[in-house]
Each structure stands twice: as C-alpha cells, then as structure tokens.
Length: 103
Image (cartoon, rainbow, N blue to C red; front, top):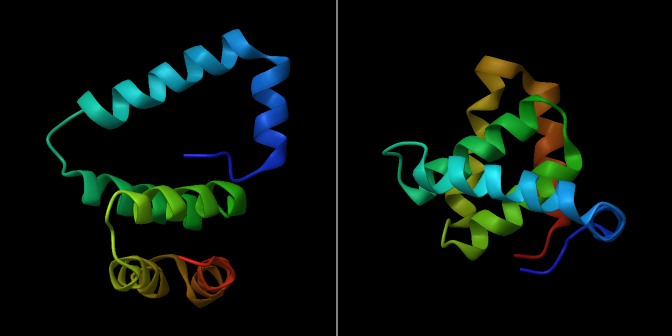
C-alpha cells in the first residue's frame, strides 16, 4: 500500500533503519500477537486511533482496514461505538475523517 501521508514518506527516507525496526515490530504484533482476526485487529486500531485523536493514524488505519476487506459499514459501527464510551465529539471528529476518505 502506498503511503497515505507525505510526512511518513519523508520519515522513511530520513530514518530508514528506525522505520524498518518500527515496521517490523508493528508487523509482528499485528500478525503474530494473538488470536484476533484480521478484521477485528483493524477495527481495534481504528477505535484506538479515534479515541486518541490521532487523525493521521485513523486515516491510515481506515485505508488499511478497507484494503484488508473491512466494510465501510463495519468501520461506521466501530466509530458509533465511540459515542457511549469516548463521547459524541470524539465520534464526530472520527466520522468526519471517515467521510473525507474515498473508499
């Protein structure tokens, strides 16, 4: 998958060894960290990014989830679950990110 954010491409170019190690850790945790399904892992990452107000990570995780076969309806449901747990404003920020992305 291509980089969604230009700044991430710049980071990879400037710090290739750090990027490689960071990427390897992320891949190991995502693929071999436990029994959760691929779909579930991406939905959790979307929720974490949303509640942490990490817009760039949320955009990236939405793109990656979609590429892995997670439906837009599943993503919307994950975001709706933010309302009673993280609050309506957090949902609205995250929902705006989803709506800004062409899936």
